[in-house]
Length: 607
Image (cartoon, rainbow, N blue to C red):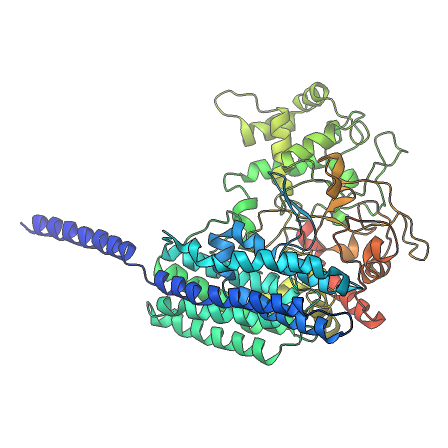
C-alpha cells in the first residue's frame, strides 16, 4: 500500500513538474517587454535618421559648422541605433548590416558575400575625409537608404515569436559586445562615442532584464547592483581617450557578466547558439571561456601525449632531421626567432614567418593566409611541403612502425577493433590535439584580470587602457584572445590589409611583394590580406608580421602609429587599417609595449 502511494505521488509530482515546465514555456517571462522596448525605440532611431538627413542637406562649404552639426546628428543616430542593437544583431542580423556595416568593403566568409561600405560607420568615415564637403552626394545616398529602411523596422516583428532563452542570450552577447567592441571604438573610431553608446546599450539591457530579475532574489540582488554600478561608471567617465577600461572590467563589467550568467542558469533559460563560448565560465577572461569549441572532449591523454612526442619527431620529415619543433621550439614559446625559418634544404628560407603556436587553435583558419581550416590540415600541409619538411607518407609510416615505442603509443591512443593505429590521419590528429592544449592563459595580465591586483604595474595598466582605447589595437586584436577572432560570437577569423612594408625602414617605405590571401581567394580586396594573429606572447616571439620585417615592438608600434602602409604614403586602395595617424606620444607607445610584455605566459606552463 505504501509503495503504491509513493508511486502515485511520484507520478503526480512528475506530472506537475512537466506541466510547470510547459506552463513556463507557454508563458514567456520577458519576451513581450523586449518586443515593446523595440517597438518604442525603433521609431526613435527612424526619427534620428530624418534629423541626420536634414543635417547632411545643410552641409555647406561656406559654413564649416555644418560638418560639426552633421557629426553630432550622426552621433545621436548611432546612440539611437544602439538601443535596438541587441535585437538587431541577434534576431535580424542581415537587416542590421544595413545600418552598422563596416566602413570598408568586407567579404563574409564562408559564402564570399561582398559587403560594400554602407551605413553609419561609412558615413562617419565620409564625414572625416579631408574634404567632407565633396562627399555630400555619397552621404545623401547613404542616409536615404537608412531613413527608408528604418521606417519599416517594426515590420520585422511580424509573426516574431522569440523565446526567453533567446532574449537572454541576445542580452548576454550584447554585454560581451560592449566589453570587446563598444569601449574599444570598434564601430565609431573617429567619433569616439563608444563609451556613451555603451551606456545606452547597457541601459537597454537593464530594462530588458527587469522581468527576469524577479524570478530569484539572491542572484538578482547582485545582478542589480552591478548593473547600476556599471551604468554609473560609464556615465561618469564618458571620455573615450581617458576611460579606465581595466577598472571597468575588474570592478564592474566582469562581475556583471558573472551574475548575469548565474541568473540565466538558475532561471533555466540557458541557451548557447555560439558554439564557441562556454557559458559555464564565470566571465570572458577565464581560461575555460573558450574550451568548449576548441578542445574536443573526446580527446584522450594518450592522444595528446603521442602528439607531443610526434611534434618533436624528425622521422616525419624527408631527411629525418626536421620536426615541427625545429621551427616551433617549445622552449622559445613555439617560435624560432627568425624572420623566416630555414627550409628543408638547410639554406633556403620558407616563404613566411613561423608564428608561435600558442593559442593557434583559437581561430578558424590556419596559416597567415588562412588556406587551411583545421590544425590537422595544417599539419598535413607542412609535413608534405617540399620547402618545409618534405615528408613522404609511406616512408614516415614505415619508420614509425619500426619503433617499438611508437607502436605501443599509437596502439594506446588509437587502436580499435584491429584497425591499424599508425596512419597518416592519426599522426595529424595527434599533433593537432597536442597543439590544441597550448592555451596557457597564465600571463601577468591573466592573473590580474582574474583577481591578483599586484600582477600589473601602473605602466602596464596604462598600456592596456591605451591598447583597448586610443591606440585602437583592440579593434583588430579582440579581447580576451587578442587575435582576429571576432566577438561576440567568435565564429569568424578576420583578415586585414595593413600595408605591411618590406622592411622596418619607415622613412623609406617599400611595398611588400607577398600578395597574401588573394592566392587562396582570388578577390581583389584580399590582395595583401593576412590573418590577425594573437599578440599574446608577442614580446618574446619577434620578428613580427608575415614577412618578419619588424625586429622590434618599437618599430612595429610606429608603423601602426603612422597608419600602416597607406599612412606612410604607399598606394594601397584596399587597406583595411585606417591610414590616419594614431597620434600616440613616445611615452604612450612605451605603455602599450609594457602591456604587451604583461601578456607573456609563464614559461613553466609551456614545458
